[in-house]
Each structure stands twice: as structure tokens, then as C-alpha cells.
Image (cartoon, rainbow, N blue to C red):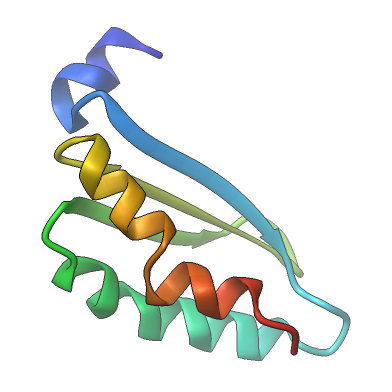
Length: 86
């Protein structure tokens, strides 16, 4: 990991890209906008950013205070919603 990123955000961060199904790009964008407040309610999440890379491609970059914060996030409401069939 880049040392500057590690100093700024901590050693626990995650970058993910998501591909929306055709015709579901708007729903994907709405979901990500609604997920930000949920992420910031998680005690171990220090930052959470969602962004659009292309017409149907989105990204999430988030950082955590420690490994337990990362694990809690990976098992939290946002992760469950992303992995549920639509």
C-alpha cells in the first residue's frame, strides 16, 4: 500500500468496483448515495466514498480504524445489500 495513503487513512482500506446491470444504473447510483450515511454510522468506518467510473461502473473506497472495523463493515448492512440478488 502507498505509505502516504496508509498514514492518512490508516492501514485498513478497501477499494471495490461494481458493475450495474443494464438498465439498473440509476438504481445503483441511488443505492450508493443512500449507503453513505449507513457506512458512517459504523463505529469502525472512518471514511466512505462512492464514485462513478463509467456509464455502468461504480466504485467504493472506504477506510477503517482497525481490522475489526473492516470485518464489521464486510459483514454489515451495505455488504449484505450488495450481495443480495436483485
